[in-house]
Image 1: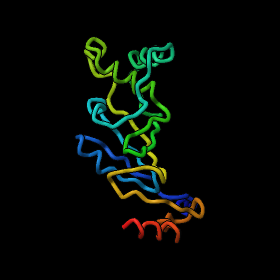
Image 2: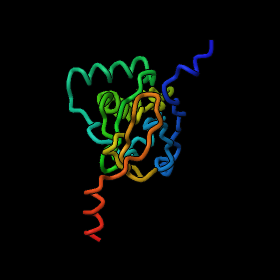
Image 3: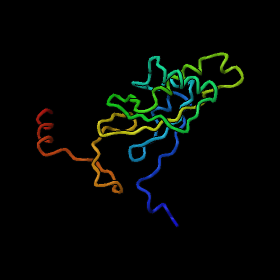
Image 4: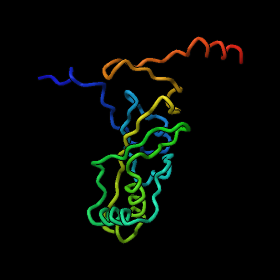
Length: 163
């Protein structure tokens, strides 16, 4: 049985960041992107709301990474914000714990406990990205193509008056 005909939309390919310039070349498919970032380049990613304060939950995540290593099976979910920042929706404790453990000398003496972090990025109509111009997305349903929404007649008149 061919399941491709039942798929809703396309699956984004994995983009691997190897240098800071690669952040501008992330490909979004239907407003989604999967990005893999090495822990060494995590400081160059424009994250917002990623840092977590000390808490019992953060201590448990740090201890888990120390003993078992970081697993990127559950990706960190972010949305692209209005200024181009990646706003963390789910995974802030994992980011903070991964940063801390990657900087510990004795924990990483015989091999790094943290390698790559996987992010799922999604764009909304309010998102700004250097990758493509800001557009309004209009959709008729999950399996319809997205198209650019034209401004209303009143809005076009106001824009003409401003010029």
